Amino acid sequence: MPKPLNKQSRQMIASLLKYFTKERDHGGPFMSLNDVQERVAEALKVSLRTVNTINRMVETKGSPKSPKRIPLRKRPVTDISESEKCDIRDCIYDMVENRVHVTASSLLDNLKRKELFNGSVSSLKRILNNIGFRFKKNDPRKRMMELPNVVFARTNFLRQFMLNMNSEEHLKWNCVYLDETWIFENGTVTRSWQNESCKSTKKCKGEGKRNKPPKTYVADKMAERYGHKVLRLPPYHCIFNPIELIWGITKTYYSKHIGRDGYGGENSVKMWTEALEHVTPQIWSNSIDHTNKIIKQWWERELLFDRNEISPIIINLSEDTDDSDIDFSDSD
Image (cartoon, rainbow, N blue to C red; front, side, top):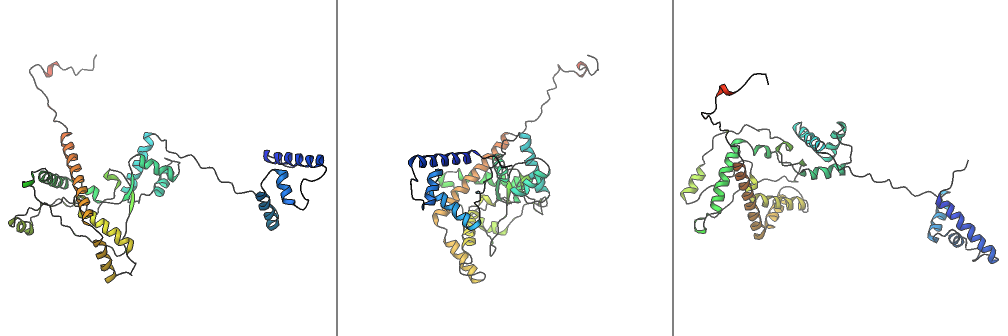
């Protein structure tokens, strides 16, 4: 039994009947019988280009083929409940705790295996951005930054730095930053999905083993004898040093251009020197301004935590209160 024709096929047959009827009433064809493709295009009300394309397909493949159908794109799954958002966060924290690299694909596999999410990777990325996660460079120091001794050192650094920043000009110390760094010959970066919680970042191997008394440095005493004051960064807080931004700029330049003249030895030293020369005084100034802004934000954060400390519980034992007045019985 032949298949029923679709609407488009019926319309083409109707056009063909109408065209041949007009030719009959006209007493003959409207155009030369040799112009086959033109007559077909005119009769079916389609373009000559379409007729030519179908004709070539018939000549080469024996029959015309329908164009590939583009599958309909699924609607993104982004409207989820708060409990589902919590499930995604907990899944990320669990993956980090088990030392699993958190990418959108690995997270999606984990969520589907636990039947917690059935959307696509693109939908999951939207949700992650909406709930505060960003795909950025891994920094295991984030956990270490909240150890008690590190928090104490950070608060002390911030207090002294802001005291100097807010001093009058004739009392303000001029800041000189010192740092050191290293580079891989070819460079490397590892990224994962993280939010502001330290539970979304990997642990350091030596976590919890740095509760040592503060050291005294001979270099500090020598600097003080010559009228300088040394303010050391708290551990794991390189964000307070603008040189770190300069290292980032130079390492990016190095990684982008290394190999242009070869690898290793003199070529690496030459490219690193070129990367350092790429840093202008304006870049330095912008880096210092940006770092000062970060330090100020952290100081305001520390002050906010101080203001939000839990107040002590005060029990007022006045003469009007007596234990005998309190009824501990089960009766109403």
